[in-house]
Length: 158
Image 1 (spheres, rainbow, N blue to C red):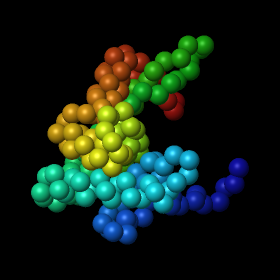
Image 2 (image 1 turned 90 degrees about the vertical axis):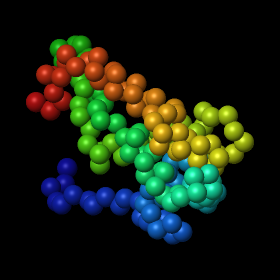
Image 3 (image 1 turned 135 degrees about the vertical axis):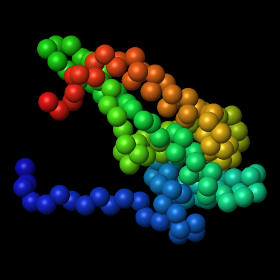
């Protein structure tokens, strides 16, 4: 193990069209079979659809959606004396952004619609209104963490 300095995180850069990181972050999560050039068009079309539907700033809706989908707490497996416990841990907004984006790119795939851009825009608008599959998954995770609150004393790093 090297004792030198840690590698800096690359992170997602700003989107070339909207100049916003939030539009560019799902691009790496959307493609299947490595079609990243096709995946760039999906978030752009989704933001365009949101702008047409809401008739106000189209970037505010995805920002609200990610904020509503970001989890507060999660559970992690902790193995103690042969038993595995689901230990609830708090999740900050910076650490919770990755699962939020993962869920907001996973949830549109379950919606019935014609193309991925329209499904993504509809899911973002639903998440901004506190409904939709991604918000339901966040609430389910929170409920599991609440149910396992008794194991909170088994912290992960003791």
